Image (cartoon, rainbow, N blue to C red; front, side, top):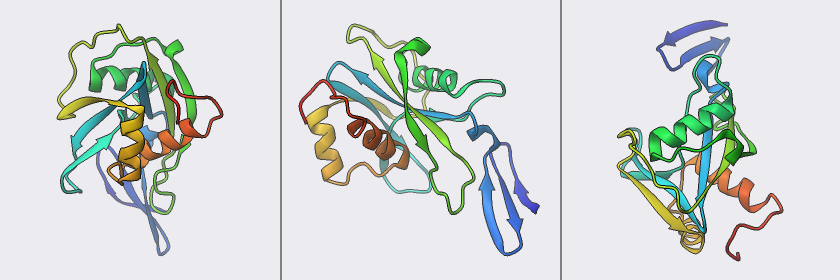
Amino acid sequence: MKTLYENPWFRVVQDGRYHWIVEDNAVNGAAVLAQIGDDFLLLRVKRRPHSGVQLEIPRGYGNPGESSRACARRELEEETGYRISEEQLSLLGRLKPNSAILASAVDIYLARIDPDTQPGPRDNEAQEVERISLPRLRQLLADGAIEDSFTLAALAFLFNRGEQTTSAP
């Protein structure tokens, strides 16, 4: 196996005729679906490889020595301004975003935020942080308006975990 390309975020490796991407910091990376009362937070993010704006949940690489739970907490605060404790997070599942070409697997969490919590400052990664009701979220799913694999996986984990969200399906 040899490395064909490398940058601070990933490397492209080759083993015979097969190529894949290794994201070393994805090992402890995380994505987090945030629920505030009956609403969920989604980011409107412009991603260069895709046209238009994507609806996504906060996510990111872990820092060296950081747990995925700590990463989820940090990413939520950085991208939405909402500060929570790690106890407000519950693990929904783990996602391998593209098992054919990416060697990464990322933990996905649910954050339950008190409705009275006010957000602080956030970074500028997202163009907007939007609160979306559960019925509207379900409609966005039905309309195909959510295409991000992390967000789709988080919602699949949530809707299939056996507990009810605060609003009826």
